[in-house]
Image (cartoon, rainbow, N blue to C red):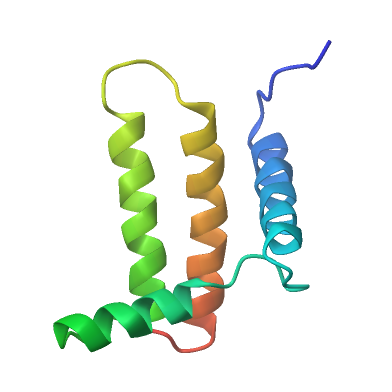
Length: 97
């Protein structure tokens, strides 16, 4: 029986696992790092000037919108939002703003 995640530190651990899993899926030893390419493509198509951190923020907002959709708790949205927060912090730390 899998025990449900109930504490903040358990959510943090699960978010780290998800990022590692995505890295393996997309063959990137650093984990999920496709946002820079996505933002570059978006900027090229729209003429905008979004930064990588903006992209992670947008995905956090998507997950929060789903979370507050009124249909109950969405565990995957919560876990993904935590992972996106960490990736956004990483991008901001590199000066992506």
